[in-house]
Image 1 (cartoon, rainbow, N blue to C red):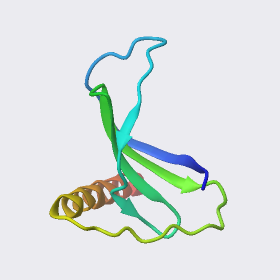
Image 2: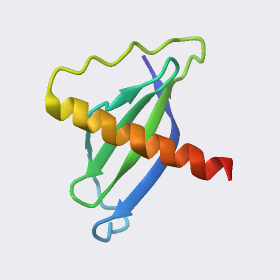
Image 3: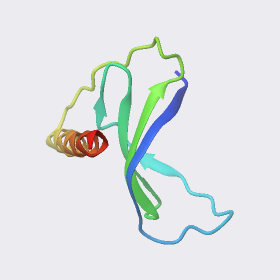
Length: 92
């Protein structure tokens, strides 16, 4: 279903991105909540960060993420630590 970007956090530029340069996102979902999903992403080794998306229809739910490997569990744990830090910083 169509999604919109809810937030972008922890973005680190790894190299300059030139005006008019086309970059593509390579990412996978690392966590879900009842109303959103999170994606740590990287743009062709140009930047990386945490991107949170939510369904365009706010009434729609997001299914729980199924983690099938140690790598996926590790990525989810990293995302949960990042989210906890983000929440603490926004509460200050």
